[in-house]
Structures are given as structure tokens and as C-alpha cells.
Length: 230
Ligand code: PGA
Image (cartoon, rainbow, N blue to C red; front, side):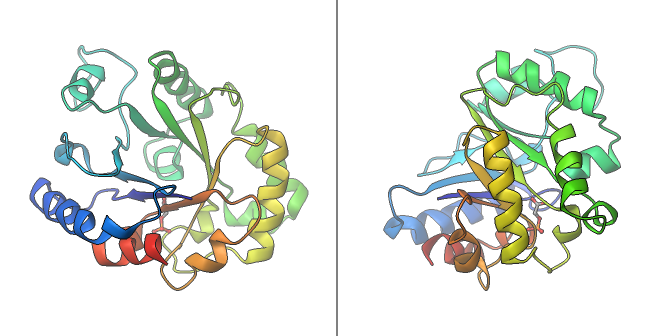
């Protein structure tokens, strides 16, 4: 299974260091087949050591240059970062990233050989329209995206389940993942949206779920390791 921690705008460089120390202590007994990813805020990127991969939550599609407030490849190379999250609904929604911008970013980082966790997800009003509308909405988020890319992991994150404490139901995850798996030619597919210690077993037991992308419940090393070890 894949367990990815998305810190979003939480944690500092100092608290990330402490977090990683605690995680390393706790994960001594983890199943060697499980893969762990940590996405700290950009200010806390570093060449940390341990049985996990550190990725960046966002970067600009450039080597370097005049893009005030952004970081590019040069800043990622310093710490050997080769993994990126692209298409998260919070960036689409709050930072106005259109599908076109998301696709441009994807293509750039694909050409750089990055491992890409590519996020898709529907808002509540689409879910309420029914399954067909959901699939149509999700598949449109593959526009301009090379889903056959060898280093892609897809994360299905229904927007209404993110940070709300209310995960999608087993039935909702199961039917959506089954349909998505066909569309993505069986690439790894994560679920995200209020995954936590209390529901992790249930979620990871669903066919077509290859892991989870975790926000809130990943902020505490104890809770995240409990999910990995459960
Ligand atoms: P959540 O966030 O676990 O807090 O719902 C998931 C995500 O946005 O990746």
C-alpha cells in the first residue's frame, strides 16, 4: 500500500524534522512493501533520511527565473526532490489552476522524469447528480494528461470528503475506483478525503484502492504511523 502525507500549509522546518524523527522510530516495524510519501510545506523541504520519499506539494514549471513567489527545479534539485503533487483540488480552487495550467505543469515535470501524484476529484453538486456525471467530471480532469506515464500515481479525492471528517462510503469509493482503474489502465490509484486511523482498514481493503493520500490525519506522526501499521 501507498501512504502519502500531505501537510498542506501546516508544520514548520523544525516541526517537520521532529515529525520525521518520530516517524522513523515508529516505522521500524512497517511492512517493507508499503511505500511512504511525505509532502511538507516548501520551507521544510530537505534531504531527510528514512524509509520514505519526500515530495513537493507544488512547484512552477521552470528551471529557475523571474516567477516571484514560486520555486522551480533548481530549488528542488538542492534536496534531491523528484516527486510532486499536481492537480490538487485546493490548487485548482483557491489558486485558480485551470485544467490547461495543470496539464502544462504535468507535462513539464513528466519530461523531467518526476514521479507525479496526480489528483482528481468532484465537488458535491456533481456527486449529487449521480455516477455518470461524476465520471464525466473526473475524466475531464485527464485532459492533456499522459495517464500512461510510467511514473504516475493517481489520487481520487472527492472534494466534499476533504478535511470534512466525512470520508466517501465504501460503496462510493469502490464503484468510482473500479471505473477509474479501467480508464487509467490499472495505474496505482489512491483514495483521499478524511482517511484516518478509524477508517483506514476499511478503505485499504476495497478492491482498486492502492493506498491513501492523507491530509489532517497525517499531521501527527503518531496518527499517520498508526494508519501505516494498522
Ligand atoms: P484530508 O485531506 O485527509 O484532510 O481530508 C486529504 C487531501 O486533501 O489530500
